Amino acid sequence: MAGADDFHDVRRRGVPKPPVILYEYPLHERVRTLLRLEHLFRREAVLRQGVLPEHHHFALVTLFEIMDVASRQDLKSELLKELERQRQTFAAYRGNPAVAEAVLDAVLDDIERTFTAISQQQGRIGQGLQDNEWLMAVRSRANIPGGTCEFDLPAYYAWQHLPAQQRQDDLSRWMQTFAPLAGGVELLLRLLRDAGNTRKTQATAGNYQQQLSGKSYQLLRLRIDGALGVVPEITGHRLMVSVRFMQPDVDWHMTPSARDIPFELTLCP
Image (cartoon, rainbow, N blue to C red):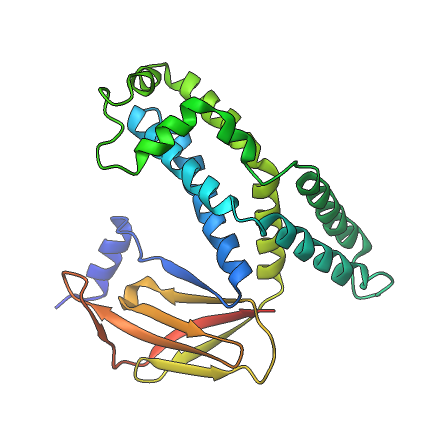
């Protein structure tokens, strides 16, 4: 049986502690789109920093996914509408002695700058990339299994043999089209997350429910100790949120957990 000395030996050997895992669940369709875009922007940035042709292939595939999400006709107007709502909300804090004016000014400046950048884009977000015939040829083949082989797209195969820095520069130039969108996504999600209230709670026998009492929330955030080895299944709507914790086996087949599970819950209005 391991004793205290064994425990400290493990600590000294640097065995990593399981991480605290953050799960986020959108309670509004607009937030669902924002979270998907944030996920794609982060993935593309990581892949772009790689040096292998395979890194940059999947960075391009991610760029095409961003194009698909950004092509929603109402996305631009939805972002502008939400930025305007946030501007009015924060402007109402003017003169409040509990609010630091310098911080408030910085937030309002960020909102104004982001609003201007998005509103000045012509047409749909990312529309300009659709005029690039080479990119569109790669995009049309990327969803076909093995469709970007050298015999299908020799020009793309040649691009993959360029120096890594040149490929990175190309990707950066194409992604610049989405810079206003990325800025808007980052700002809106930051403001949303900062507005949430966090409390510690517990799922009894693996289940948790909370009535929302008619109050409107846009995002649920759940933090849990990864050492517990459970996965939350989250559902929610305007009246209630529910969490059921599942236990994976070695093949990741999920069964409901019957344990009491402590976690942190944040609801963001």
